[in-house]
Image (cartoon, rainbow, N blue to C red; front, top):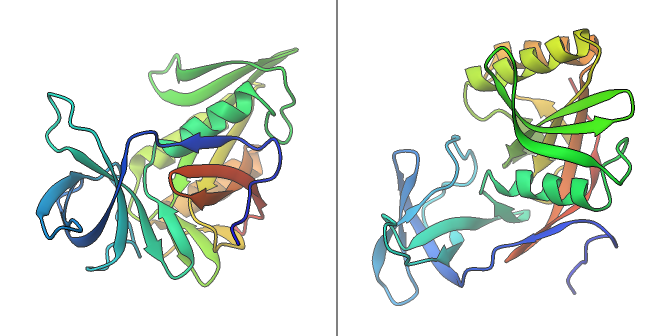
Length: 242
């Protein structure tokens, strides 16, 4: 029996043909070697620059999409892998697409539709955030982060040192201090988490910055997903343990 996302929750679908595979190894950040069902060994694009902790076991089951358009370095892109807790979507762009669908449709908790929003917002000081929502009397700025690492029910971020992530938190904090509303939204791209926490053991500076941002008034939202390849759907929210 398969579960269905709650009614009205956004669903993003990878429309390219799906291809099963087995992981051999990751090479650099954006390339992995896999075995296809017919025994062919090939290279695939990895749409995730993170460490992919827990998602790199040789022989693990993968799902790729196939797109042989001219100009591509590889015809395949790694989208999902299977872990003990079920499927994981490793594509870091999927969370942005899900949040965009939420803003276009049912909204997010604390942001009721209809919503006037723009993606990829440039800031006066030179930074960029994922979304800005225009509200009566002001703006809400949103930065979205993908989580694929879960240990003992805890969704952990980041899985590598991230100066970019710290900068985003500082930009969100500055916006709050200017009188705006600012959110850091984490999307957990797997189904086996009960709580989210910063990965102090990996990047203590990020963890400290997250605590400072929350204390300054930046809203921290953690969204869960239901994954049934080729679909990934928003399914609820999780508490945060700073």
